[in-house]
Image 1 (cartoon, rainbow, N blue to C red):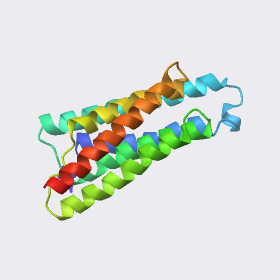
Image 2: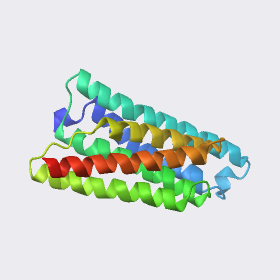
Image 3: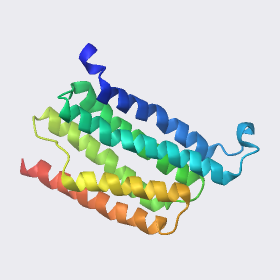
Length: 180
């Protein structure tokens, strides 16, 4: 277990801790703590937390590969941290009415379905490595969430690009599952 408490896994746990904090800044805007703050500051704080968490996603994988610190715990906790961060972002954006419920439903449905498919594949001894489309999908989802949090132009268009990439990468996972 000692080997599992390495830098990459610590970064994933840090990302898990940041997800509810970001969600809090997005959805609890009537909290007395925030009474003197303009809502745009809550966006800035949520956006900063999201950027920090997103950067840890890159670095935990990079460090794990470069320092040969890939663990079974990391293989579970890293995708879980990603899903928790995306879920917190999308739920928060729905609450503050900045994201399409249909887009969020499609993205989250694909994520849950593919996670289940990956679990089945592992049980069957099949390879479940992330594809390039899956990595691009994650980056575009992160950019879209960031744009939506900040309420920047083209945020909704980016969200729908993320939906398209999400569906395509899901198709690739399904195709590859049945091929192997």
